[in-house]
Image (cartoon, rainbow, N blue to C red; front, side, top):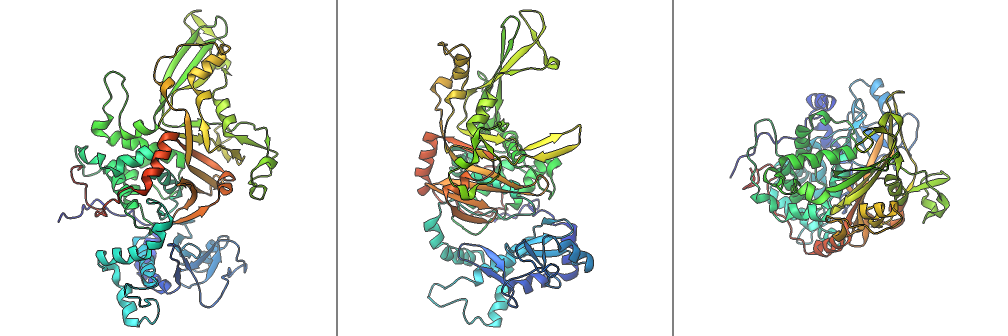
Length: 553
């Protein structure tokens, strides 16, 4: 059997967590295990036997998020955790009562520790309702048996799989394959939200689940750089293995850190920036697949085959009418929010109205704004080849070629370099579940510019499907500095909310009322074919995620 690659390690914990473990070891984790409560759906929380409703020891409040100190077991709300740490020296590590996740008070952030994950997982196993012979496992446990389970960090992997599969029989009948929670490793909701969308992007998912990566040989795995594409392959295999317990994508995070060293930290990052960075990493690691075709110069790596399209930019001289046309590839389209002209009272569900704004934006309005002619400023005068001088001009964008999967990014974060300030735009935006992109194609935009007269357009846009179905919505709630990302997935006519490790079924109205940040649409034929194939998708083998993939590395 191959030995584990020494480079495959979990991300280092924050220094405050390291100091806590140096002083106290795992004693706090083991004591906390008695208070952890689990549910068959995989959720876990902390319940104190001494009180039915936990309250903050400072303000006696219970409505805010509450944290349990791992040293003295006192409870503080999110507004008073730092005060407790200042009053009690060294009391820096706590546990989120609602989610059973580690929290560093000094970092004001969630932190990840694989030892804590194992403690929670063992509690899940101990709380399994019945064994194979029908005997109640949770009742009448002897202390010796508990000690054996608590020390089961070396639990046999095969037995673990059997126990998990017993608990997951009901879950498998309810949730589609591949719907699995992702543990937050310390402000990594930005990563989890995008990964959930990528997991269910039809052609992208099929590429990693059908073994196409196996015959694309990596040239090498150097001593200081991991193969991001290989780690994504392992990640897909683990999520689609049939295991429903939340998965910790620590290795993928570590590999991404090496690819994007400037973003390697436990600080919250932008989900859109992560999306672009991951696709760029897949492109760079594609080796053979990224070699451009000589005739077209297009890259045929999986990232470009799925997400890449082409924009057309027409700049027209306002003096003589000469037009200069350029084409640029895109992996996503960033849209400004339109001013909006639809009152919020028109929302499908008034009780879920997300804002008191008089008007809301619409996705179609944002696309209209994107393809609307724009007069360039005096500092952007265009050099007209016909006039042979710089002239005032009008610029108009359109879409020359649509991708298989269309990602639309809504610009919600504004930055003002002069005033050195940033802000988030909380305006609600309506978006359709079925989207026809035909009005925004170059053929339609240019014909409309010339009074709908017929023009012959070369290329592939005339044969491209323009009808798209939504399958993922990445949302952002909160402020610019303190926010949270959540993804909604549409699978087999049902919407699911993916909030890190928690997966719940939700109604359509909840999705429509969400504050969308990134929208993922698939071509209609691909979308329906993907839903048909989801039921019969083969389960990927649960290979050791620390081992390199045969034929790949």
